[in-house]
Image (tube, rainbow, N blue to C red; front, side, top):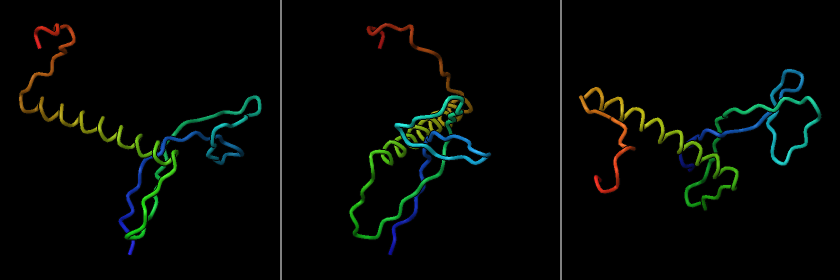
Length: 100
């Protein structure tokens, strides 16, 4: 029995060679004139029930990127909802610590 397959969004570097995208890993030595691009790709990993959940440092970084994007999306939606409900989101960066 497998646990659900939950993909994450990986921030990756890639080049285009003969019109084909090739993901690159660092360190990467590029020839002069090589175009290095950045993008996202959906990645996933399956685990059996009872199996130790293990991810590489690269996978962990990619999962953190996904969580960062999720948090930003949630914040935008929450702010939009609040504005629809009449809440005022003003910038309080000018207030002093004694006002808080």
